[in-house]
Length: 135
Image 1 (cartoon, rainbow, N blue to C red):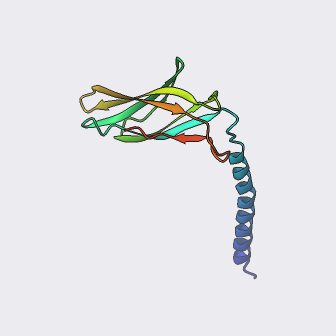
Image 2: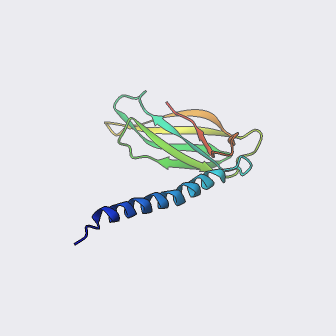
Image 3: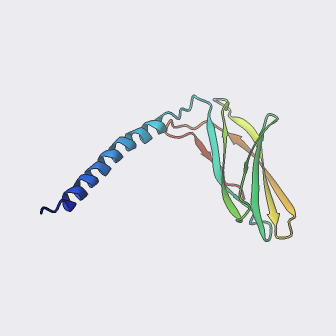
């Protein structure tokens, strides 16, 4: 009787490599669609409540021209990642915005801090993200 197990293993490996070859170009092409001319910008970063004792981040809110966008966070850590997407960011001067970070301490008391930022379109078509870390 012949042993086909090594042949099946080789065929499985070839199939896996071939399927990866199909996925990688698709992922690369998707990144190329982010265009500085589109006005779409994803603001990402880390929000930290280290300035308040025994506090964790629960919310990041960004207000622009009277519109409010927010990311609700788990509230389990002193610092957490956030992501908020804007769709109509002006090309040259960007979009003036106010950020508010909400923190909850171990006594369930809320603490906040604010920061003024400018949401800007990326210079490179390879990304649509703008990283702003909040401490």
